[in-house]
Image (cartoon, rainbow, N blue to C red; front, top):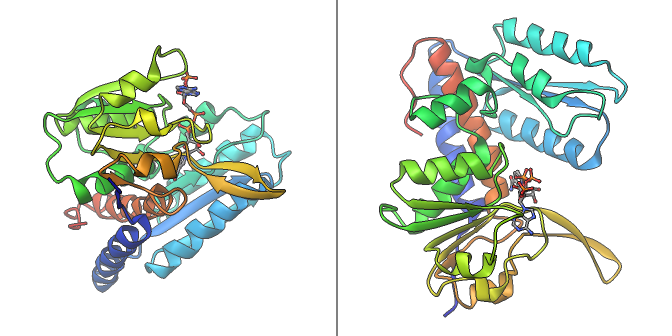
Length: 292
Ligand code: NAP
């Protein structure tokens, strides 16, 4: 079997076009959604992510505010900036790019973000809403992963889903979203025994571990939907390149559908960040959620 390729770039492009339409309709009502991104330090990968987020926001008609702070910025100054952005009427979404330098507590800074502007969905309030099944802002990568799964499998009810990884950013919220779709969900992590056998039970297999090609071909059930969240930098013949957590070639010979990495989940993460910004902008003003 050769798997169907789930084209994250294309699906993200379609979502971004719908977002641009929604933003244009909001402009017509005098609402101009804005996204503020805070980057502390000069990590090159984070720099690229922040630049891409800003460009994507502007392409969708969303105002982008970049705040770049030196690596040595005290935690109190980052907190003060977040509080200013919380109070800024032009800002609908506040995103603090991770990782933060070691002297700054990510939990402390995230805890300061106003839940209504928490477009990464990382505050306790939004995490709690997701757990309770209430409306909130859902983390972008899991949200994007669900859209990709549904592009090939519209009804998820009763499917066995295995999520590799239990981070607050990806694994846990993705598991909750799959549960909300009535999947039977198992979360695996570094202490899980016989990972290969567990993964082979999955109709939907999502890998978010940060281990290059951990998911080998024999982890994949015939016909399964495989979502590769991983972005790992590896040396290949003296050149650096990005690979996912899944051995793509081996897995595609067994999977029914699979995301490439890069080019699968990554573009969806950015599109869902824009989606969250538009939802936050509408909700803050008591407007109905745009249909995205
Ligand atoms: P993380 O916080 O480092 O969490 C990794 C998880 O994987 C942990 O729960 C860990 O288990 C588990 N794990 C590690 N080694 C394992 C193993 N050998 N077997 C089973 N589980 C194992 O990472 P993250 O933030 O969730 O990110 C995961 C990957 O996704 C990374 O490659 C990251 O770059 C990528 N990512 C991509 C996007 C995107 O937009 N495409 C967005 C975010 C993240 P323990 O909890 O037991 O330690």
